[in-house]
Length: 300
Image (cartoon, rainbow, N blue to C red; front, side, top):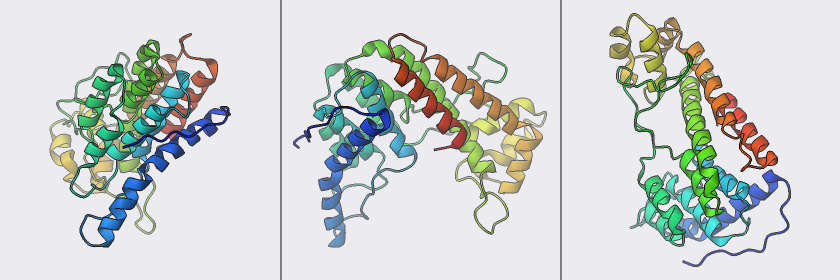
């Protein structure tokens, strides 16, 4: 495959520059998606994949942000290809006769050696983080309001893409700050996603939130730690094997929602504190703080 190389105007506001890079990545994917649509139209392939949305967009967004914060050129073809490769990893469909990860590898073929190991780790990580059982979730935080950490977290949503962007920009000195920021924010977003799944807005006409599609492992871990009913709670609520109303009641009785909100606040504070480094310019410190606050408190 050839790389896209589009002349880029002088960088403007952060959001505008980042949006331009993401648009180039989508342009890079257009021929692949068109080919898949043609194959599906003739009945010889799976349903066409769509561009990543929601959580899947966070990987490319943070990769581009890390790259630009490192002083990278917005039109750099290797960075654009890497962003497109991240998009492919989150596509819900597969390309005919060839997994999306194979196409992603082709796009990422020119990654520098410093970024290759990180890319391989990211590519082979599962698309969803494993759901930790509440009685085995370890507590790794340092404060009284820290939530239990997810064992075996894939770290692919924010953490690894952000580090990948910094390496692509030639700034390994940003890795320490981005490492702390990305890990804390990934955990905060998982807690927020679980809260939304359990207590979120009700689908119209149902009178209450729908049952979560997956067991809210971190919330259950918090509840199990705080509740005297530690044996009852996991047995009745793990793996989503209970109705939504009962699950919410069990979590509310244990104070899991309030504890999770305090945990999210602590994780956001930890993420933002990691940005206090002279290696990162003030505009980007403010931008990463804005992203952390918006995502952690408003959802994805």
